[in-house]
Length: 199
Image (cartoon, rainbow, N blue to C red):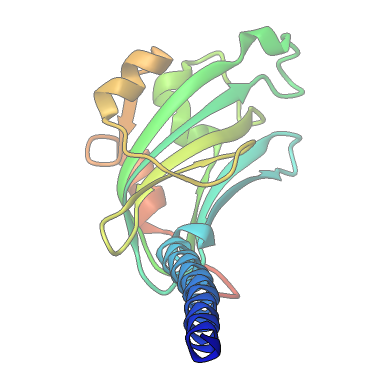
């Protein structure tokens, strides 16, 4: 009877040890899987995080919108939504801001495209002057692996594909396309190199 009790206790101990080992092995596997997913997501977002926008003040009191690509690979199928606001020489209220919608095919590696009021004159009309203030709000683009992204000036970077017709319907703005608009085509062709880029 004592031998049977010892056998039962040994068996129970073995089962308990196996259960504990299995539990910790599962926890380790889950942690490794989670880390692997995080690493994949970081790798996937790496180029997209290097695409950014900002405004630069012009000497005449206006401002330009800048779209930059600090990676060593091009991004494509760029769509830009923003607002143009009256500058100091045209003291209208901000309620007169006009939405613009620009598309161009490629933003070269380690380069930036600057959108100044003269580039947007086709959609802003004659009442807009050289000191108009340009604010880029949202940029959609496709990275070198083919993934689509949305960079909003007030929100985190997200995966998002959008069709130009949807943007046109959403904004009510006419599309300025570098295929048809000579000013935009010249500006994109003259994309300026950036000083610092990341491989």
